[in-house]
Amino acid sequence: MRNTLIPVFMIFACLCSVNVNAAIEDYVFENQEQQQQFRQLSDQLRCPMCLNSNLAGSDAPIAADLRAEIYQQILEGRSNDEIIDFMTQRYGDFINYRPPLNRGTFMLWFGPLILLLIGMLVAWRIIRNNQNRPATAGLSTEEQQKLDSILADNK
Image 1 (spheres, rainbow, N blue to C red):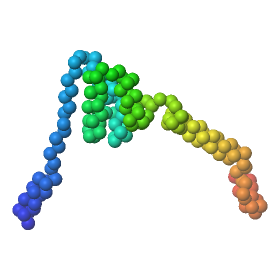
Image 2 (image 1 turned 180 degrees about the horizontal axis):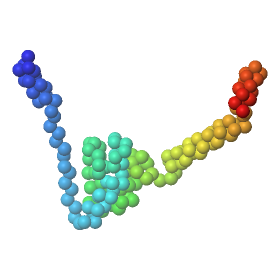
Image 3 (image 1 turned 45 degrees about the vertical axis):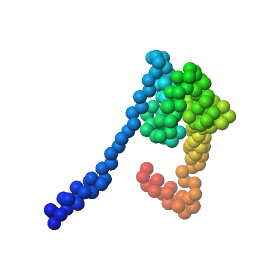
Image 4 (image 1 turned 180 degrees about the vertical axis):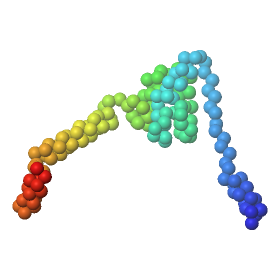
């Protein structure tokens, strides 16, 4: 039995192993400033597919396409602001790790603070209501007398 399982496991292992061929992008720049600009932009812009990864750290196909687009625009001589504007027009404010403060991103910037303030207000109201209410509220007269006698016995 053991001799028959070894070939089965070996075949299973061969079928499960997958060759992963990651493409390494090699961009050739005319000078060091262009290379620095490329690194800065690919670190500053978010991958639309990965949600929490920048273009430099993403292996998604769209991230590779966007890196190639940035490379082309850098070679054309566009500035960082022009490239960011192009990407923002195409993908919206989501593409920026630090989106600008405007009407559409107001809740993104101030939503956590508003929720924190609401939570603090609710906690304050609950604590205040519990302090104003006597601990024996809700007891019947019979239960109150029994509690009073127990407390008197303990003194």
